[in-house]
Each structure stands twice: as structure tokens, then as C-alpha cells.
Amino acid sequence: MIHRRLGRRGCPAVLALAISGLLAGCTPVVAGHASPAPLTLAETQVATHPAGQGHTRDTVDYPQTPPVGGRHDPSWADCTGTVYSTPIRQENAVHSLEHGAVWITYDPALADEADVEILAVLVAGRLGLMLSPYPDQGVLVSLQAWDHQVQVDDAADPRVAQFAEMLAFSPETTPEPGATCENPLFLLDRPQPA
Image (tube, rainbow, N blue to C red; front, side, top):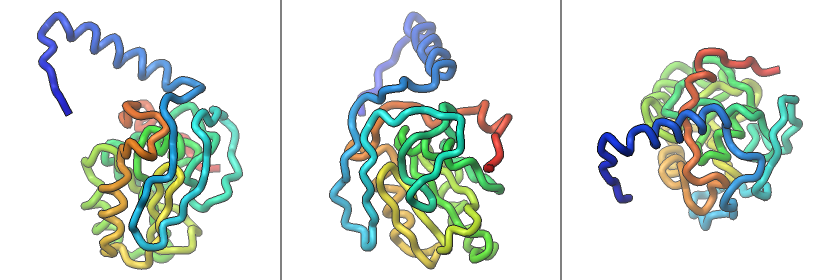
């Protein structure tokens, strides 16, 4: 990645772009495309959700649990290494997946404190990752990226870190490359799951 210094003259343009991005969210038609990446992780499930999924404020009935793509809320869940202690709306999380995030979930009925700590250490502060409980998912840990999912029965399974490393902002799987993961408004006023 090439970084350039903008100097003082470039700062207003960057600031204006950032503000307009936060106000506008993302466009109704996404740039780029999502196609299954050639993953080598065992037991990866691959779905097919075409780019350009629409926005809705309604509850969506997703075919996967947790979901890996499809229609989603206009507001994305903050995915800047955010560790949520309570469940988040899946419609907001799916929007984050569209931006290139990896959403790690755990079933609170199956996970103990040590499991959650292992996952939190992996996620905390890492751009493109988020962690939340997902009641009744039926497996200890589930890993989601756009159109990709791996489920494991051990928080220390090496596939957890491998999945996060391979798919966070992956150019092969991210429908909206370059979209932000930051959403402080979501953190301040987080909608609750239905």
C-alpha cells in the first residue's frame, strides 16, 4: 500500500470526503464484486450473494445462521476491532461484511469466560474485525465474511485467526472495497436485535 503525505492543503478534502462518507453511508449499488475466494480452510461454507444488495430497515430472514450476505440495514456495525458484550442486529452486521469485515460470533450458552477472552484478544482493536454473542447459533464459534462461513467447536482453533487474516478486507470477497468500518454513531445508539 502506498501512503502519501497530503500536507495541509489535502486535509480539507480528506475531511470533506470522510464526513460525506459518514453521512451518506454507502451507495445503493456497490462498486466491485464479491466472488468466492479460493480458500483452503477446512469446512468453509461458500454462499452466493450478488453485489448490489439493497438496504432495508426491516428484519431480514437470512438463509444462514449467522448470515453471510444479502439485504441489510443502511447503517453498518462498527467493525474497528469492536468487542460487543451483547448481541448486535444481524442486518447491521451484514452491512459490515459488505464493507469487508469479519464478524466472529459465539453462542453464549456454549462459550465460557475463557472462550470469550480468547476471541476478544484476537479481535480487540483490529480494524476489520468485530465480535459479538449470537444466541442459539448452535456452535461455539462462527466466523462470517461476505459469502463465507466457518464454524468451529474450539475458540483456540487455528482456523479462527486464519479466517480473520485471510478474509478481512479481502479484495476477492469484499463487495465494497475501501468502505469504512468506523461507525461511531452505531456505537452510541446501537439498535437492538428483534
